[in-house]
Amino acid sequence: MDLVSHLPDRLLFAVPKKGRLHQQCLDLLHGSDIQFTRNNRLDIALCLNLPVALIFLPAADIPRFVGEGNVDLGITGQDQVAEAGLDVEELIDLGFGKCKLQVQVPEKGEYQTAEQLIGKNVVTSFEGLVETYFRKLENKPTGPLATKIKYVGGSVEAACALGVADGIVDLVESGETMRAAGLKPIDTVLTTSAVLIASRTPSNPALVATITNRIRGVIAAKRYVLCNYNVSRANLAEAVKVTPGKRAPTVSPLEDGDWVAVSSMVEKKVLAQTMDRLQEIGATDILVWGKRDTELELRSIWGEDRAYQKRHCEGISYLSLSCTSAKYGGSSASISLCCRFISVLFSCNTGGVCPCISAS
Ligand SMILES: Nc1ncnc2c1ncn2[C@@H]1O[C@H](COP(=O)(O)OP(=O)(O)OP(=O)(O)O)[C@@H](O)[C@H]1O
Ligand SMILES: O=P(O)(O)OC[C@H]1O[C@H](OP(=O)(O)OP(=O)(O)O)[C@H](O)[C@@H]1O
Image 1 (cartoon, protein in one colour):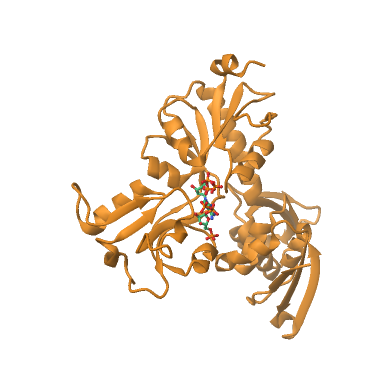
Image 2: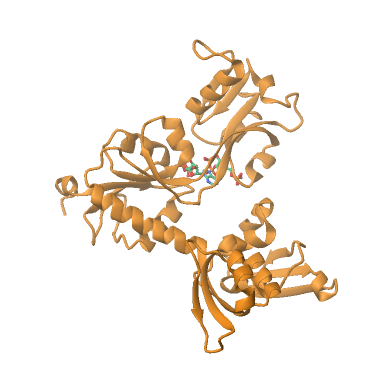
């Protein structure tokens, strides 16, 4: 098919061609039934079931193409949108690609605050955001800055060790890269996650709305599970407070007039606590339906600060978990289970103790 002559009829949708956001974007397109086949080495793919052409671009270039109206829709990081400084419409926070743009300095160095970097060498891939940051810090709205901001395209963390920088500004997720480079954070410039963005002048607003709604549905399905349980009418008000749903729960009468069945959407990250609470209230027959998301569920067990643990789980099917729980008389329990069935843990209150994890 002649790609170029087919493009004008189609809504153009830019997705990152590589890097951290690439695979999750492909998963999102798949979940939204946006079907395509991408020929080897081609950065354009025509959709088979919608008048859409996917354009595979570096994440950093996507805000420019969308902001200047050449492309209708795009997925990239909020950091890239802010860095480009162009007017685009942010339609949905997609909830992945979460990280922070941080000021980092050598762990054992002389700098403890960002102010101490004024007049020094700072290396980054985000020149625009870093200039804005130091303008504020130096209280200099216009004119040349005292701080020397130097651009590098990648491996920013190496700049201090190489003697090019006194401090750097770069993206941090788990913190492993910076720790390994002997750096520590001293300030956060912004927090970011992946977003769906649209041009202010899209070629086909109705199709933009259709795709946006499909993606919103996929995101909701990833974030929520459906929780069903039975509860006595006497405890219904309390149970509804615990499971208010997205809008409201569905409550159906049971043949036993004193009891009702409740069906409600629950955010995965609070599912464990929600199930514990429902049990305390006296709900029975608690069943959870929905796609499992191991990363989210692990986070709900270990908490955000244990995010690094998740790395152990990527690409493996089985985990060994052990935890000491007051519920089990302070004894230690070890189990191996398939990632897909990790939700089994939800029925096991870990008593706030962090389980250990290892791949097996
Ligand atoms: N460690 C990270 N964790 C989560 N999200 C990240 C991380 N690093 C980058 N991102 C997000 O992904 C976007 C693209 O960054 P990435 O470094 O993957 O792009 P790239 O430069 O195109 O790829 P590559 O680094 O493979 O050349 C960033 O703008 C940010 O929003
Ligand atoms: O806090 P962490 O989880 O360690 O992640 C942070 C690293 O991830 C990004 O780089 P990436 O690996 O995408 O490569 P790059 O340096 O070439 O951009 C970022 O630039 C950091 O180097």
